[in-house]
Image (cartoon, rainbow over all chains, first blue to last red; front, top):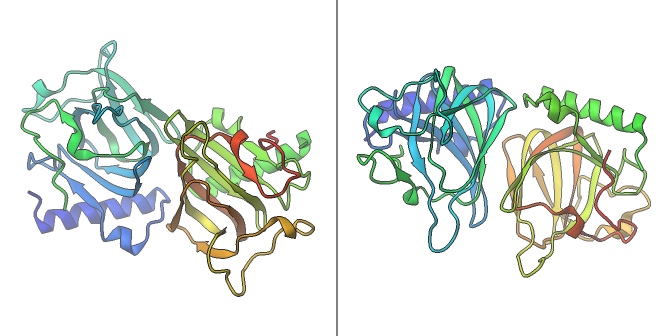
Length: 180
Length: 180
């Protein structure tokens, strides 16, 4: 559970980072920024802030904002009701982000999982994204990502987003992200 | 047909406008900016510059850049092979853009069609988008749009883009945009 004070701090920082990245949002959007701690109660380490621009039956677009060192924990988007899972592309707009996917483990990865959660991080092929760089994930691909030293603003372009269907490696994460 | 000099001028301006809007692109992307005159040979009035970030079977994301007064001519995205046409959302990032769609005609519209093409513009319900504002078009909805006085940078989020299937109201536009 995220306290109102914690929500306000995170949402305020998110608005400031979007502004710094040159991304204009409306007052209505400012009022519905999402702050997700994935139920682990440690937002500063396992957490993500986001703004969903649209999420129709067919496509979805969001801005993701992370503080330095924040991690979105490992998960995948499985097939649902006979439809392929969510396909998503991350495009770094500001700062830097490290995305980890299946494949040859990177010898000296730049990131570590949040302390105490190491066993729930199993894919170690590192993709570093700087502003203007992007990476597309096929459906059902395990992935996790962590902001670089200055934090990051990342645009996500995808098919329909259904958080409740996401499958996290960490069994303590049992449902859609807790959202402020 | 767009001359190399015309392409270079338009692409250079596009790169500068993206930069002004705070949008970072890679050198590879700079080298493949698209300039479309829709075959009418009057880019300054009927034309559009764009960068396609991705266009998979399921989703598509682009930046659209227009100079002051440039118009993307009226068209729609029909059903193709039993699949609903392209659904698209325009989100203004910088400047302003006027989108025209079916519905109650706006009494004093801000824009005029390019001179000599008036009869090929048939929908007159005006939606003005400023930075942070967005509008979603259902498939097969006729629409056209024109940049405001300072030009515009607009993000497009959509399902798969297949320019060759677009149906333009103006019969002189018979195929996918001529691209530099």
